[in-house]
Length: 483
Image (cartoon, one colour):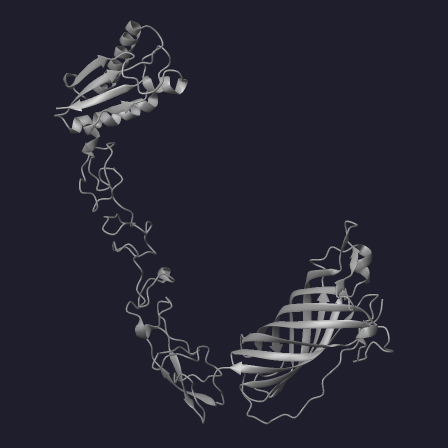
């Protein structure tokens, strides 16, 4: 196992003197440097250049995070006398490591954030996608997997990273950072054999020099608190300027202001963020409903008032049925009331007192077109029997409710059979079936005087009697309505 190689440091260039301030809340940067591999048996990689970039966000005065990436190509040059050589003869290189690295790091400045010179230290992790190739042909080397199969010598694996360096801040917009980084390749994502896994490099070390650019306006401010402005709920500390600017003129210095870009005139708290007494996300200055229940957070409109999607007077955060049709009458929890239980809510029901169980149209009224043509009931009769199945009984119950509502309507109940059996026997059977239907209607409240019963036997076929399906359709009840 070879020793870890030392990383190379950049010499410092000329530094331009600017005033010392804390960097902007967001920043971007570019960097370049050297990188190397270590921790395995071979190959003997040297120190090639690498480059990349990052974006970041300041979390507090001394803490910041960044998302970074870099591209690397490292050659195994057998002609060099030292592993620390910066040069490489690609014609004599036996292997090439190509990688793309994506990392997320959390960093802390070890000294005051107002210092021009500082020491950042950080940790994090990420994903690195790499492959080892023949530099002459750009073909990936093959190795043995854990399942003793031949696979490409490449992987996308997770890594852990540790870094430190020197941070030099020229102005609120520009910083120079000299950094040393140590990545540990965890093996998570690889499936190489034990022999390959134990011999490959597990550490990636490098040094880089980067320029970081802050986003936003400059900050060169000295502030002292002078007065306290009373508020109905939260006191606001007001600061006075001492020779510098305030980006949003809210009385909070930009280096203390967590909301540095408020609209002019907005009342703010001690952190420079707009006052919001009911915590609904709408500042008090433009909140038309400043005392909204806190449970409505996330369910208010641009004016700070609780949203009522279906306009029935109950805000969505209290509404158990927030998407009713507009105009429906609702109960205390926002769900529609339906007095006649016909499925059409009160308020939208043109016939709010229809009989329960009777089919209605979209306006809640009984569809009287049902009596314009005969009603066909395909009863599931057992051969030679006249008893009505349970599904048909449910239909007869609803029909009885309709007939009880339309008291001036009379009916004929006609029974039919298939052609199995003699015509005389089939006519007697069909009459029994029709009478049984009539008996059910009477039991549901229909006056027997309004019902006439007929046995039609095997007449007026609806389908062929040559198939079981056809015969089933012919064994039926037809109800004809008349006045």
